[in-house]
Image (cartoon, rainbow, N blue to C red; front, side, top):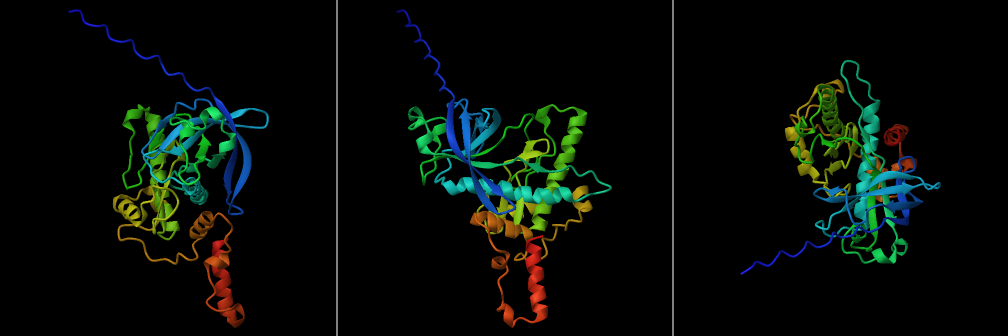
Length: 334
């Protein structure tokens, strides 16, 4: 009995055409401590095909179109559907974490070391973008796959974190649970490239140590990865495990990193406190980074005096007490 021929393969699925949408772009201003909203035009070249995905996020290529119609290549990052209960605030938390990292990096890079090479640490400019439902073409309103299928659970709106698209080999320096990656054997680097990567690895490890010490043990920036010294998708662990991204593992994440960290020459050159016996107790109330974090999470300016409450009315303070209070306020705003 003759075998039936195999049925022909199904025709390849046609890709959706590029889509251009009016959107709202939010950027956090570290000078005024608030999110600023600006109108934007976003082009999605391949809405049915992503660039790739990690454990928590899926990435799509997008373009940020300027007033002259020119596009800047960007990457849109959305939470995957295996992450439950994604709400609008989660995207702002991701943006806030990257803004917080920029504040740490700015101060880390200002420190000059004479005997040790200390590469700078840079984080990509991060935006939170919202494409209102009314601006999405009808053909994409009810898509079950692709770019427009990723919506928040609370508002059912398309939102994402957007940053410039990096060109080059993507590499990881440390994880969010204490693991380190001194080498990248799959990259096939030349000797000079390997030396450069090793230098950035040392800087990344010391930077994580720096953030923990400078925040008084209340925050740790880790999960450092990117192209050369341009980093993206960092994670911040906080002592209370609240805010600043879905990967915040709280004190457990901080403790695990401390157990595995080995200080390097940059750590020593910066005079960072050894973590072998834990961090010494510090006053977190007047900490500059705690102040920034509070203002990020409030999404509106927070007065320094709200973070350093008066123990008694000013008119009842002695001159010495007033000076001490003024000094605490100045520490928050330097």
